[in-house]
Length: 161
Figure (cartoon, rainbow, N blue to C red):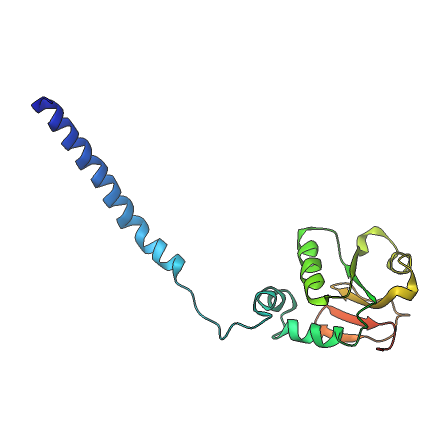
């Protein structure tokens, strides 16, 4: 190796070291703040679903309230979830409700697709245990339901067994 080659290598090493040092100096504070988090109490069985549902319902303990209401519905009955549309937010709500409703089957319908009552009872009325209206108001002729949050109402259709 010639003396000129060593000098070039040292300059390259110094240049790359300088770039790495600048990168770390600029990004370290941002990286540090990104990995820091506030712990919000003990994790529970509903911790992950509560994190989302408390945000969309603006209600503390949303999962527990929903689970308590669903406990009145027989396990062999279907829960019909009426959502405002068929967008990504609605699909995620449906997935959360399917998780919380287990072992009950959940069918979700979109209020934007026409008459909700026709869609609900097209599913075989005898199999439906409750209808959960999510950010959609139940029709005036529906029985009074259980309020789960500011825009969430569950209407049980059959008494618990």
